[in-house]
Amino acid sequence: MKKTLALVLTFMVFSLVAQERPAFKAGEWLKFRIHYGFLNASYATLHLTSEQLDSIPVYHVVGRGKTTGFASIFFKVDNTFESYFDKESGKPYKFIRDTYEGGYTKDIEIRFDYKDDIALFKDKKNNKEFNIPVNDKVQDLLSASYHLRNEYGTQDFKKGEVLSMDMLFDDDGVYQFKLKYLGKEIVRTKFGKVECLKFRPYVQSGRVFKEEESLTLWVSNDFNKIPIRIKADLAVGSIKADLDGYNGLRNQFKIIMD
Image (cartoon, rainbow, N blue to C red; front, side, top):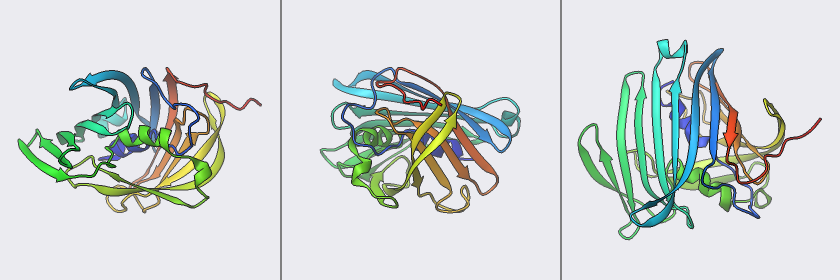
């Protein structure tokens, strides 16, 4: 499960539906229940607030995920991800990652400087700092999700079409993230049936995922565009995350009544 919860958080709020109104507001809180095989492995949350960073009005999102109960005996995970991004443009200004995954640790901070087209990468664990070249379209692990929720529309995409964007969240540098639209599907949830948009994020096969197309994401087909379900086939076993709780949504959560 190493890096698995991090990747789940990456895709938890991706969506591609054109907005006639904003998709989110400060105060939005989402909770996900994550299953690894037959185990209720962990919970993850995303909480969005309104703050100021260097006198700039920003949204601040904090994503947290950790193993619980029986699963934590075999593999302890405690992850925190944070992003500060511009309220108007959605550009990230600061990204934080504090990770513990079965003995593997990472403590980093990234500051984005669009004037000089660089990101200052701080590796606090190893006491290292260096610059990574970026462009003004780059997103971090979490800001990308909220940016997509507001900016793109499924009416501009055909089934099977692929969206690409630049992303930076680790010292590997900027990479091109790809997401394929698969169409609509009804998903049964604890809240009722929800019409969803189905996506296929492309991931790197090998150590974590079985294949490049091992991950599937379902997003609510309403003005909120929140993730409803995520499934992944891992190199060992499988993982599923379901929406378990929510609060502070900007728009009405659309449930299909029987």
